[in-house]
Every structure is written in structure tokens, then in C-alpha cells.
Image (tube, rainbow, N blue to C red; front, side, top):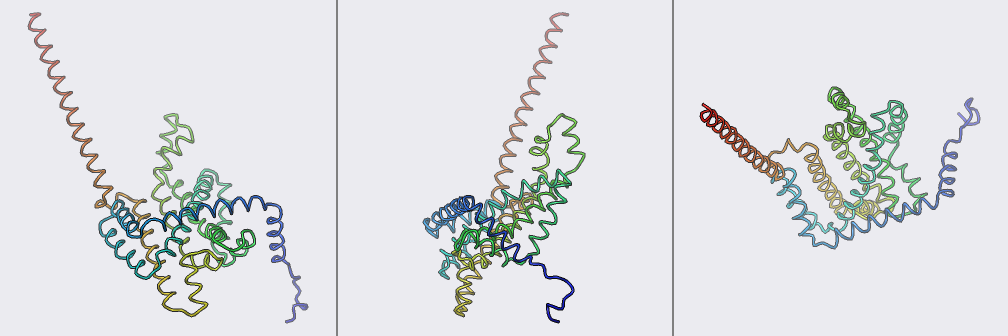
Length: 328
């Protein structure tokens, strides 16, 4: 059927959207330039630090982090797999991708957690935010490159912009879910003791919701890594750019090595953030051992204090008995 024969008039939504992007770019150029400068400086600084440090030193640091929060198995696996990245000559690009993911995750969390808290405390805000999150999660990821390139041109900043938009929804949803899931009686007990809403949020709701919030952080990191290749299309340096180059040149080994490096970083970050969300599930971590030792010292200190108190009571009783005998 010819489009002229359609009974439904064509609506130029795409043209309206494009005009809106141009309007934002023209009227908020100062803000976009400021964001581009800050984000570019942050990513460049983190990347320079990661690349400046010797690779073997960083491997040991990553392994110690795995040992600290999870287990020695993760530490050994980290050493083996990260040495594999070095052996594949993908270390520099892997650190560029890690810096991009860390910065994108940081920005996404700074935006997602406050929105999630507002949504949990206000049903009207939740009703407005929820369809927006649905839209963000169902929109094809490539579409986010359009405003990213219009606003920031080519480079690492549009990659971060697209990654933050794509990875933001799980952080908001799980923050709201975690706070709404806090036991109402616990919150009422805080209110009964005269705690203000901010005190209840900081002292009760956020600590109890932390495992769920950390699950959201974990999902944000995973989605950020999944955007590495798409960020590479926008010109962001890293493993994604290597994959894009391998596709354009049909270089299979290059693409396989870059893709395998993304998987290694993703598994490492997933295991670390999962352990941070539920530290009690990993009793063999160095952090748990340290906590048990500190708890043991506290217990022994409490026992000593209790023993001293008992001695004082007994001494007081003896003294009392002695005075009673003198009185007699």
C-alpha cells in the first residue's frame, strides 16, 4: 500500500526528536561542554593511573581485593586470568575499558540511588519514574549513541553517556525495592524512639537495604561492560574499540582476545561486587577472618570486664559482710 493511501496521517516523531536534540545542543552547550570536560578528565586520570602502575603490581592488587572480600579461590583465579590478559597483549585496552566502566558505574550510582530513594518514599514519584525506566530498558542500546554523539561528538565521553543511560534502570529499581522491603515494624520502632526521617533512612533503611542495593550496583556494572563494544563504536578507547576494529577488518583473533578480556573483567567485577553485597555468605574471606578476630578480641575484652565487675561485686559483698560483723 502506498503511504499516500494510508488513512492514518504520518506523525514526524523522529523529526521532532531530532529537533529537540538540536535545541538542547544549542541552548545547553555550556553545560554539555562542562560535563564533557569533567568526564574526560576523570576517565583520562583513572586510565593514566591504571596504565602507569606496573601490570604485575595491579594483578597482585586485584588478587588481594578478591582475597579480602571473597576467597583465596577468587584470588588465584584473578592472578591466572589477568595474566592471560597480559599474555594476549590486551592489558592497556583492558585498563581503558575498566576505567570507563568504573566512571560510568560511579555516575550511574550517584544518579540512581537518590532517584531510587525518592521513588521508595513517594508513590507518585515511583509512578512517574517507572515508565521512564521501562522506556530506557527497552530502547535498543545503539539508539543512545545518537544523542551521545550529537551532544559530545566522538570519543570516550559519548561512550560514558550512552553507558550510563543504559545501565541506570537496575540501580534505581533495586534501590527502591530494597528500601520498600525493609520491615515496617523496624521503621515504626525507629519512629517510636523519635528518629527523624533522615535518621531512619541513614540508620535503618539504607543499612538493611544494602544487599539489594549492592545487587543493583552489580547489575549496573554488568550492563556497563555489555556496553563496552557499543561505546567503542562511538570512539571510546578500550576493548570495545578492538572488537569493532576486528569486525571491520575481519580479524578473528583480535576480536576473540578482546571479547575474552571483557569476559574476564566482567566475571571479576561480578564476584567482587556480589561478595560486597553479602559479606556473610563468604566466611573464608580475609575480611570475615579479620572481623571474627576483632569480634573475638571484643568478646575476650567483655569477658575480662565482666570478670572484673564480678570481682568488684564479690569484694563489695565481702566488705559489706565485714562491716556487718564489726557492727555486731
